Amino acid sequence: MRRRARDLTARARERIRAAREHDPHAWHPHGDGEPGPIDFVHDPQEDEDGEPPLGSPEPGAPDVDGAVGPGGASGPPPVTTPEGGRPRRPAPRIPSRRAGAEDDVPFGLRTAAAWSWRLIVVIAGFYVLLYAAAYIAVVIVPVIVALLLAALLQPGAAALARRGWPRGLAATTMLLVGLTVVAGIITLVVERFTAGFSDLADQVSQGLEEVESFVVRTFPITTNQLEDAIGQLQDFLVSNEETLATGAITTATTVGEVFTGLVLALFTLFFFLKDGRSIWLWLVGLFPRESRAYLDEAARRSWRTLISYVRATVAVALVDAVGIGIGLAVLGVPLVIPLAALVFLGAFIPIIGSFLAGSVAVLVALVSVGPIKALIALGIVVAVMQLEGHVLQPLLLGRAVHVHPLAVVLSIAAGLLIGGIFGALIAVPTVACVNVAGTYLSRRHEGPRPPEPKPERARPAVTAG
Image (cartoon, rainbow, N blue to C red):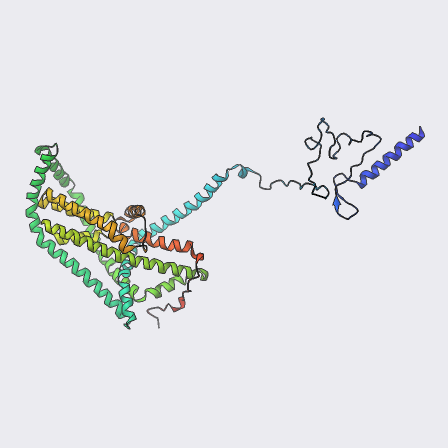
């Protein structure tokens, strides 16, 4: 008995020592100094069949629930054995540190939310900018008008400056040329309107009678119904006479603002022609040095685009006015020159402006020379607009101002909603310039770096003391 007890005690001590030296959760170096997996220790007398004991973490050991191998609850994870090497212990799984509610949100929803709040910030900033511009519209509008006129007159002033003219004298000369042309056009329009108004008044009554008879013969309506409709229109005008008078008084109160804006536009135009480049160099000097070259190049491209747009628009407007004016003169429509001038101004609003001005000319032809000639006038207007849209604009604008017609219509609608007639006037050139500048800035690294501007060359026109 004592001998058996000593043997059991010795085996127990040996197993304790072996378990202390061979931790089943540690690694120990082999003879070559490289780490390797442990050799699990078990009692061969208790495992006579040569299989690992029950529940052992050794590979291939039977699990407590009867499963064998890596699929059991107590078996080790599968190991990979490299070719010609020892088994490698798989890397432990590190739990995620950001586990929480955010991981349950789909990736698409997180992306949409990230874009949404940024878009809201941009729209809010744009709204604040528009609100501030509307608050100081008396200043903003003349500056924009001066910028558009400068795009038309600046090439002439630059040509005079290259010939040795002082910049101040060149700017003054081009400003006087522009004023002379505008004043001449206004004088001619007013004079012809005054001279032709009496003829138009005499023809309106006769034309209305022809229109009335044409409507009665063509459409299912009687003379009494037409007269009742005209009478209701007259009653409406009489009943809203006070409102119309209030609107006229409000318009009269804005004459002072118009005069102030005109003077400010002329003053700004002079300095744009004289010191435009110097003013821009001062502005670009306010930006970080790394971005000045790209901003200057984008501004140069936008300015060339604006010059091309204004030149092409003036040429297209002139062709529209001459074509429709000749057609109206052949038909015997009165007020040809005022109507041609209206078409010229309307052509500065692409697509929509020419159509509206042409519609006014057709209405005047309807009440003055009858419905048949009015239909002929409508055909002339449509033919001129087709010539403008398919020949003149692609030929004159080319690729310098390439804006899709849908973008043109949407920009005009947005400009009309935001800024009225003036917003519709500047919508297309604004979209064209933004398109050119944005395209260049988005691809600025694809080409060579543009030359660096030199803001130090910006000299003030007036110095103190």
